[in-house]
Amino acid sequence: MAKMTVYHGGYMAVEHPEIRKGRNTKDFGTGFYCTIIKEQAQRWAKRYDTKIVSIYDCLLYTSPSPRDGLLSRMPSSA
Image 1: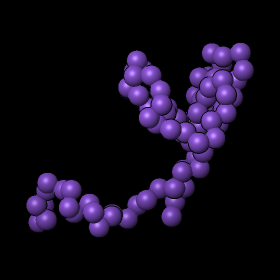
Image 2 (image 1 turned 30 degrees about the vertical axis):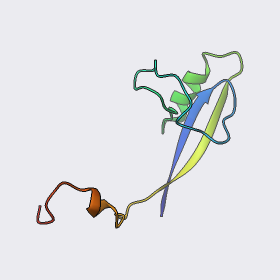
Image 3 (image 1 turned 180 degrees about the vertical axis):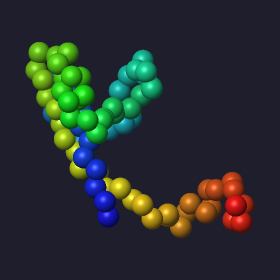
Image 4 (image 1 turned 180 degrees about the horizontal axis):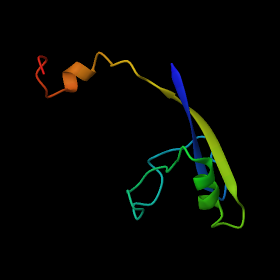
């Protein structure tokens, strides 16, 4: 299983991110914003007196789930 490292820049360390918490006034709505570019997260953190970049290793699931066929609207022959 592959991993991807992502970064979040802010004013405090976030040990367990929750996408349900946040402000819906952001460009892309409510969520927990991360980037694969460490320098970008560092720029996000520069807006605050206390600058923290949190680092997360995410597992990438590349195999289709058996449930995917149930949710698809495409014919199986497509």
